[in-house]
Amino acid sequence: MSNYALWFEGIYFPAAVYEPEILREVRDKFVVKDGDTITVTFPKSGTNWLIEIVCLILSKGDSKWIQSVPNWDRSPWIESKMGYELWKGDKHPHIYTSHLPFHLFPKSLFSSKAKVIYCIRNPRDVIVSGYFFLRKMKITEKPETLQQYMNWFLQGKVPFGSWFEHVQGWLSMREMENFLLLSYEELTKDTRSTIEKICEFLGKKLKPEEIDLVLKYSSFHFMKENKMSNFSLLPNDVINEDFSLMRKGIVGDWKNHFTVAQAEEFDKIYQKKMAGYPRNLFPWEEC
Ligand code: A3P
Image (cartoon, rainbow, N blue to C red; front, side, top):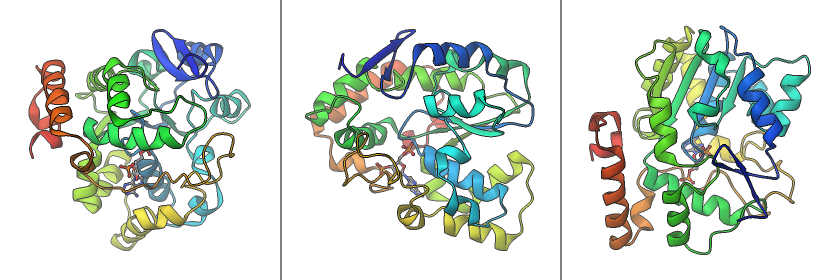
């Protein structure tokens, strides 16, 4: 892991894409503005799906933008080198994305009215999705087995650190009115209502036929074919040629990959670490 790793404040970042000076500057100097819309997730929780939905809401279902501009330019990850170059220039983005844990996010958020949409996903599915993702990445150590990846995940030795700390950190904002908590599971179960909820949070009134277009262009199949959204524009020194961000796009794939022993081991740790949180915060707990 060492050749690939950058450790910053105890959090693991892929060294090819992140720099300590930038991470420090983002935390201390990036100015979050009142009108900003920020998508925040632990990686593999549906980040790109949410970006697509937000972009389509802002363009009232018109697909021109999402089909002509890569998602990392439409809603840049402010902590990446690429995102940093954008905002260090004179282009302060008004919609952006972040995987940063709560304590590394720009401090200026807390004195702003910017809107944060935080999306969570069953960590078991996050593990499976992350495992297959890292198997195709060239800038991080490749896990040999799901068990190895699960061990890294439980130790917080995966990009952006511990899922548990990430979720717990961001959930501390859950009572604030500029914070919307969503889950991959609710997005999957009732996509339309969830899109309407996002519209309401953003103060955007869309006509039913515009919502139809948001649904259509943010669908798994449409995004899979859209090279501005499926990561196929990433250079091949970063990913394998057969990589697809849009892998399965389902809830509960972990059941196809975890052994009974792995499920039990995960459960034990999960219950211990998440004790104290109401179960109804997490849709996967209701199954
Ligand atoms: P799987 O690997 O389980 O298929 P992120 O964007 O945070 O990296 O998350 C990637 C996961 O979101 C992948 O999950 C991907 O398939 C899923 N995803 C992306 N767009 C989606 C969509 N439109 N509908 C459903 N799932 C989607």
